[in-house]
Image 1 (tube, rainbow, N blue to C red):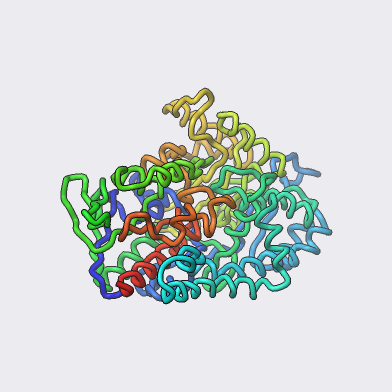
Image 2: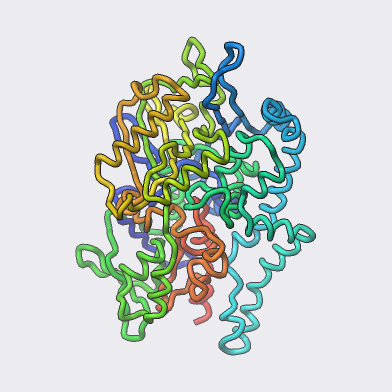
Length: 527
């Protein structure tokens, strides 16, 4: 990193945090937590030469399949919605539900793309350095003014669309979707992007920004597209590690950091490992959540109580349970029956949206979770990456991922999850799938259930939150994770944060680490 000797210390036996591939059952390789790629910033992809270092992505087209749970008409199968890159085909699909919606859908896509593209300058740079502009010597204050450049570029790109952007990020996604469309299956399918990973519903303020966050990515220069990484999401981490090693970085697994070393001058001077080993360094960058960084790893007497109180107030609420399933045959959906040969259809490669018939279904699932009960009819994003990537499962078999919502961290009455609760919820998920694809339950040969507390325990995700902190308006940009540390610098000199809990937020994006690294280099150069 900029000519510095760099060491990466990974707590687990497998590198990559939540972007990992694990062989949970013999022959079945799962993207155990993160499961799709899109948000990784193109300049990082290119600068690290990730293709050369083994990163291969399977593009999905079509990319969204929403089967309906309904009686067929005139002995026909139930209806479904299938969306992909071909706009004419999308309009045909949407026209099955609403000709009006089919007509305006291209304008909706263009509208969101326009807003998403304007945000890109903000993703690739630190937030405006307000403390730097008002404190310190004049030379440094003038230098800090440069941090306004991305914000100015963002404003120029938005132009006359500023009111549209403001409305989107401050409104419920339901408001936007109801304005554009009348078809419930279409609205519910699109609304999943506004709540996925977030403890919110389409009727809540701020869900509009979550929607925008999930459509601002790109793969192979195609905007808004999500793909499967060959070998699972661990392939992303492996390619980054290979690139880093080629540039001189040293990477160590099974090396758990338990404390940041603080020197007499109140500066970070290294870390202490679980076995007591001290690793000394000029600077320390923490990719852990802000809570773990400042409540568990940093000596509390080195931090101001006001700052600690603020850290305690960061929202990490998560509604997510991830279930990984090994099956011995391809799911057979009533809405799109398998061929006699049993070969995968176009819909099998998609994000399969279940229990997404209407916005009301999503709202009901959310309300149940807020009462301490796992949703009886959870929102599910089901993916079968082995349809495109045969390296993940034995011949004829498949790996299936369920990203489910809504499940609380604590159950009703403040009770912790027990194994029986996990099994009961997983069975309710499988029962739901069975209603769309009969025979699914009998195809299961293994399952891995990760509730919010499990995601916290296994991957260090505080509260089980996949974004390292809620992506709510009070925890974005200048306020992510707190206004005082929005520029990656902590109250401890030479201790920096570089994970998804900092700007620009969650997802396998790389931007936070990129901007944090540039901040470190600038600080070292300034000394």
